[in-house]
Amino acid sequence: MVDLRVNVAGLELANPIMHGSGTFSTEIGQVIDINRLGAMVAKTVSRDFRSGNPPPRVAEVEGGMINSIGLPTKGLRHFLETQLPEYKHFKPPLICSVSAETADDFANMVADVSVPGVDAIELNISCPTRKPGGGNFALNEEHTHKVVAMCRARTEKPIWAKLSPNAGDVVGVAEAAAAGGANALTVANTILGLKIDVNRRRPSIGNKLGGLSGPGIKPIIMRMVYQCAKAVNIPIIGVGGIVKVEDVVEYLLAGATAVQVGYATFRNPTVMPALIDGLAAWCERNGVARVADLTGAMIDEAPADTYVAAGAALG
Image (tube, rainbow, N blue to C red; front, top):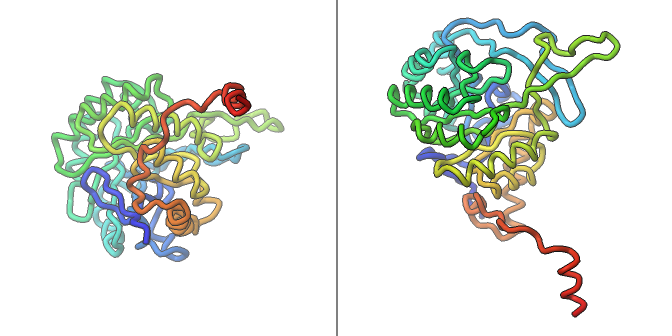
């Protein structure tokens, strides 16, 4: 039997597969067994009520979708009093995603959610429709280090820093997050994009710009996972474009310890257990006893030149 367990900065998961923040709620338990997940990742919560961005909030594109939800939330009190008790009915570890406008409030939020039932805290410092210093700290190395370090000082819980693919130097930002005390990195949030309704000659999204997700972005995020895994010595959670089990394996080979899935859930709400079963089957077929052994196991060398290889065979 394949051992699917992975360890993310001291937090043991039954398998490496979990939902991305904003794509999961306990209602999905009506169609899947939530207890099979590697972890649960709560929707991002901020201190106060947020109504989110104006509609339309989602638009399909070839190879994925653009969304600009705007991090709507009923606030911290609602999370602690209503949502958290619901999550406690399930076995997988709970990752609490938090957001804030300032570094000080980020640190305060981290302290406020460091309660029993929360197993790790994901810092959503990378919402693509927010500006540096206004929530999207991950566009800048200095801002990233500052907010992560301030959060680190306020909790003993594991901290996962969610990075932005829109940063000019994602590796530099990853190094800044690790230096600030992050226990793991979530790589990455969505890519800022634009879709235009040509009939109306207007943006398809109410907020004009939105975050691109889906299979079309996978090679870009895969490259970032690979680069970040080479640069830091903390676990990486790969996020972006996973729709089949081979995508999961690819992220692990590139250096990820675990993955988060979002877009595929909108296409197929039962994709999570299918990916878990598929991963076990893939490992069985390929003689992999432990999923953890796949992390960073890509053969890291260029393929042989086709013409050289052909000539050698003829000789």
